[in-house]
Image (cartoon, rainbow, N blue to C red):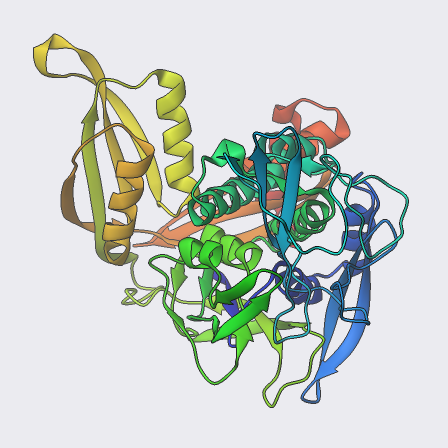
Length: 479
């Protein structure tokens, strides 16, 4: 099975993850060209070579309007890599608004500028020691001098921005889901509704670049399974402009619920909200590195030197399912968990959305069958399939995303063909072929997402690309 393993011994941030995945790509320049051509206002991404503890790697530097953000009062530039400011906006009854920001740099020498604001009503005035005046919203000055205006965007604006980018629809769906998780975590951290979360323009643009870059890189790598190590979050506290923040930061802690994390001797924040959201969204499991035949290693480095290597490492290669008794003499068997509930009070649209969210959060499959509920009401029986070790997490997910107040759990034995993949070249482009074999049986079929994307790109019917892929598959034209 084609597996991506991400090692987070020094935490994770959006740009460090993107840098590690970038090193695994065959066409690195093509990736940069695509990312720089997305249409993100003022954003440019450049690959910078560097080392950490003598290990060579890459840092993808994201500049916004020609600059990497600097920490106020530091007197020098920080190359970003851990990416959030904690900022809250307060609306006052006396006719104007004050902004205060929690700005800090972590122990890895990275700037945090993923800004989240929440609006709260107050009946009193307070003075904020910012060193500059607040006459109205957005009137504050910044320590950098680019001429564009800084604005604030809510999650809806971010979703619209991502939706406008020149990326495959599947990549944009992943990116929006990651940003939704960030917004929910920030809202919980600040104690406000998700709709009241606002992101500062520069921090949002930088983080959107990181999020979309990671989602796009993973789509190019096409892993069938993603495994992430337990996450090192750092330890201690970080001093902010308005106090001391515990590590991990509240939003990061919210995102990492249920994930194996640990602190240690390294003081400071090693995992950011963006990094945490990406890991949780894509990880099929959090565990130590499996036995795998590696094909490539990518190293995304931070800019500050430590006694241990300051990097995220990504490995791509082949693994075998641990439950497999033999791949050649027969298929495989094992166990699977079914989570089942009856739903009679959700509209088709809301149920469809809930099913997509459950899939995004790691379910192996989700489906609904029509049925008649108590009192003769038409409804649906929702079934979610997951790995046995994911039972509790996926049960919470079903309870969160649907209106059901309870569900049933079934442990089932299963027989299945060993999955795999290969690629074929057609006149329209490369298409992945999904394979499954065992018990003397072999199944093959073109990957629909590849066929649909090539059909759209070449302006031809989808069936024509499908037929071309099947012809190439039958001829054995493997890439």
